[in-house]
Structures are given as C-alpha cells and as structure tokens.
Image (cartoon, rainbow, N blue to C red):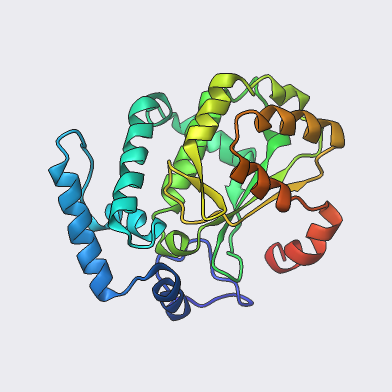
Length: 261
C-alpha cells in the first residue's frame, strides 16, 4: 500500500492507488475487461506486422494503450512511431556511459522530484545552467533524457497521470543556443508530438505532460530561444507553451508551495 506524504505520492510508486484506478477508468476507459482485450488486440497487431520488431510483453504494451485511452489503432500507431524513432536515432538509445550518466545526476542537470503533484504527475526539473557543454555533449544529454524517461514511464502511476516539466534557467542561455541547430530541433520536434493539447514525447510514450513552467528566464534568452524554436514547432505546441508561461513569483505561490516543500 502506498502511503502519501502530505497528500503527495512518492515518485517511485510502482503501484496504482485506488483513487487513480478510478481516474484511469473514468478518463482512459481502463478496466479489467478493456485491459485484457486491449493487450490481446495490440499484441496481435504487433505480431501481424512483419516490419515491426519489438516486445509484446504486457508491461511494454500497456504504456501505449494508456497513452491512447485504449484506442487500439491509435495505440498501435504510437507504438510504430516509437519504434521508428528508435530506429532512426539509434545513437541516443545505445552507447550509454555509466560514469557520464552518474555525473549528469550528480551535477543535477535534470532529475525528478521525490514526490508527485497531488494529481499524480511526476515532476521533472531541468536545471539548464547546470549543463556545461564542454563536459556533457548533446548526445550525453539526449541519452540522459532517454534513460530518465524510459525508467520513469515504467511506473503505472506515471503512465496514467503523466509529467510536469520545470525549466530552471537563471542565465541568458546564450552558451546553449549553439545547440539549437536544425538537426537538433528536428529531433526535438519528432521526439515530441502535440496530443490532447500538451506534449507527448514519443520516446517515453507519456500520457500527458500537462504543464510546463519556465523559471528565472531573462527576457533576452527567452526571446532568442523562443523565436528559434518557434520555426520548428506546430501551432498547437506554440499555443500550449505560451498559455502556460508564468512569472516566477506567480509560480512560487501556486505551484512550489505544494510541490517543493
């Protein structure tokens, strides 16, 4: 049994509390019957596709079913996108260096908060200023993101509730702008897809990021980065990001008080 702390469930839940079982049934159409039927149908779709080589275990397939509310065609389409993305970007899914990954964690470039939001979302904090490009290359960052998301999406509570993202940027970010190349931005665009008015990273088959906050971002850095990204993002993504931009002092009042304490 998972015991929440001050109403907040731990990041490593590895189980579904009763309230989120009800939420999954109401919002994702998940119940014992739909789960059994969905897993069987999706497995048949995978086995029937000669060009698709992937696992057919329940714990792997259930992520795609929950991400698409147990709509079999949409879940299968997402699974194929996921495998296609992996096939085209093998370099960020292989060649992991333990020491580099450990250093990313130690330097707190990004990481998950120990507790979830009250709605069950996992909270990923990205400290962009802790990323030293001379120490960690773009491939190291990409592999780290893949590793973090692949680990976290295994948790059923994350599959149901998704993620919230916090970007902590206190400098101008100019040292990172050189990585906003067409190829890297194209990778970002294809690694995330707008679904249900939010971001759904294909690499982790997230259900719903739901919320993105930018902290301490100077106007110059925000303007430069925003206009660079804008050329590569679709209108729904731009609209979503714009609608959720809040000033840090507002965020401190409505968000950090219940999450970071």
